[in-house]
Length: 201
Image 1 (cartoon, rainbow, N blue to C red):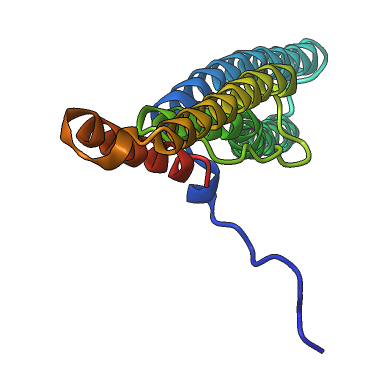
Image 2 (cartoon, helix red, strand yellow):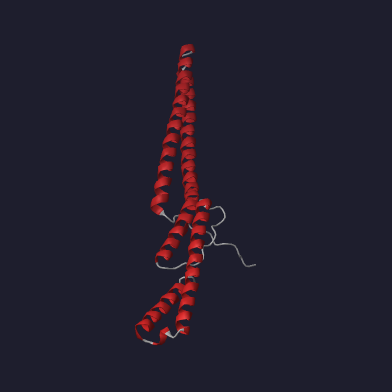
């Protein structure tokens, strides 16, 4: 059976605006790592103080060095496991948070990237179709406003083209385009109208 699903997307596909996305992702990730590290240190400090208190209590009741060594080794082993567990959890949190933020910023960068593309096309005189955003993208209200503006501009463009067509047809019916200065100007107007028509495709 042929797999008709979408091919797996690479991480680079989610980085449409690397400078914007990575700057935001790096800031939030670093801050989260610092906060997680500080909380982890406080937890470890409490655990280490508790271990020290246990040893002090043991020394107050007995002086068995062999038993004390066994207890100290057990407490130290527990402290080490706690450190490794917190380090692994913190690293996993940073990785998950990084990937999550890349996807989330992509949902913002995607619409901005599309709008910037449409602006580039408009600067080149092109007024094609504005396609809908993907499911899950953000900035939908902003994108709807942009699409309304683009559609209104496209409608005005079409109306102007129709007015030019009528004007050219009237000039041709009156025999203005037979030659001379008016003929050349009318020819340039036809070429201009053709370019305007191509801008709508």
